[in-house]
Length: 327
Image (tube, rainbow, N blue to C red; front, side, top):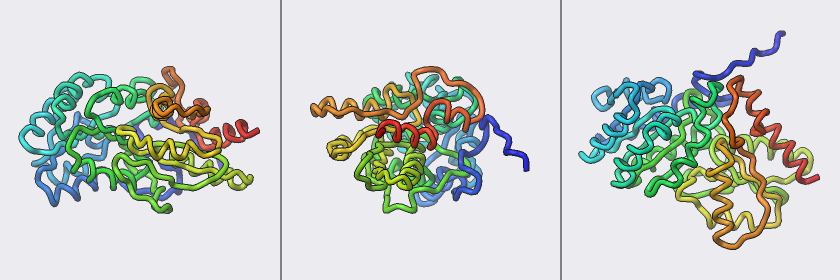
């Protein structure tokens, strides 16, 4: 049998492994469920509904969906107007287009006015092989400095389904990194419920602590399971909300006598590692933290499994990193 061909994953609909349990288009279905009960919800897209899972909502409720074309600044402007009229918009595009092209509009139209506009954006970090034009490796760093902005980086379909209604109810602007298509189902095996603004221990462990966010929580859990076979006890602390950041929970876990790593699908600058370091500095906590993150550089195009290994964010590389640090 010939080996499976590696593909770039440039426009693929999902990031799930072959045979993995998944949920199809969790964001689209979560929005539709809310919209059936509350007429204030509206959806918008910059010509990418099919690729951000808003096509589920669009097809069911075409009168409440707005297609603005490939014009991200117009997308934000339209969402602003709808929010001012009492609607609660969910606006979708790719993360790179929202944070790079429409930053000023998000900042001054939405955030300064503290409007209830929800940006739900796909292809976060290294989830496409298209290269720097589509890899939103710095989106969290861009938005963390924006006043009033809430930032969510979900691990899986469970996180997305549970986070979406909380974002709808939250009074203020939000940004969620969307995993699309057939999204892995991971957190249902754990005693976990998404709570906006809260970090939660997913797996306890006495020897190593991995503070993780987004899809890296799944890889942290996989790494912990593999390391358990070697007698290494790993705790995984999931931080789905990056702003506001749950400093109290994170620092309480870091205070324990363990090797500590952070894991994120984002550049090492300005994301989870930065938030942890800032929290520690404010409280005078002195301890070495080892980041597992994307490097401060423009990434290559190519097959995603190859890129995950190249940049040290695959499960295998996390296991290798921890073993090396413990040695």
